[in-house]
Length: 469
Image (tube, rainbow, N blue to C red):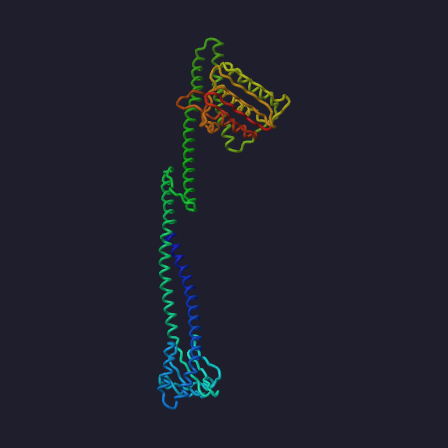
């Protein structure tokens, strides 16, 4: 049997209230009974002490002339206290001399009747049921005692009424408490939880834009916020997966283009080679085919390098090389390409000639070369490219600046992700498959360094590499 939160809370509340009610009832009944019993006992003792003198005097005066005057006097006192049911007069030997109800009662114990102090007989409930009050005549003689029969019936009725009142009040309080608690639970806890659960089901069905309308500042509000955050995270993750899937599709398209172009060139020049008539023509054909092979080899090498880095088990083999010489060699390879595109070329190498740097030369050449190649690629003719290297704060700083197309603020966070290209796939304006910057970042980080970028759209970009010495 499945119990909801409301049923469980109400059950627990009911049991708690019943337990508390039982304890309060017990304490109230016990306290009230004790108070009433004590009051009855004290009242009976006081009544006996006050009534004995006039009753005894009347008895001594009229005992030989009849019981009428004695009965009248006794009845006056009986009317004063409803708890006193009968009054008797006995001798010191316990024999009955007078009874207000004309009963034939057994003799009172002589030790009670002859006592010089009031004697009290109590029942098993602690109530005084009989008071034996000694009567002393004016001469001081003690020949009689007055016996008062006390009833606890009225007190017990009061106790029963109190118990009924407590039970009826407690039952009403219990019903009202459970009803109001059930209402409060439903309004402030169960219903909001159901709303959160309903919203969670809507979100789980795929509607990640669904919002939970909860302004509560408690645990339920925190739960609602957590569900919304989960939905946002799921939405972001799905968006990332879709972006990755899109990038992979673009990568396949771009890669096929980069493969097809050199292969087409190679196929065309192979056909031309068959018709070549001179050695000079054949050399030009072979040179063109060689350039296409280099492009294919570089693409394959880059993809293989990325796969190796991402596998996480790469240990770079580093050589201690002269930093200035290495940088000169890398930049000289691109100077001709920049001038061929009619770009202004500015190269400044402020690294000391004797400084040695532990690096993987092939990988670092690819990392720095990709940055220079991008600067040249995305700078229009008559623009400029600047490369500056220096030592600063214990790091090799390699800065590549250009006056090219620049990068929009939305694109900057995506620059160093795999397969990302700054140009549209449909308008394929530039060569590349979108792994150059990603590869450069991986290589630099393998050397303990970092890559930063600053760019203004249509004004140019600055890429800076920091490598600790």
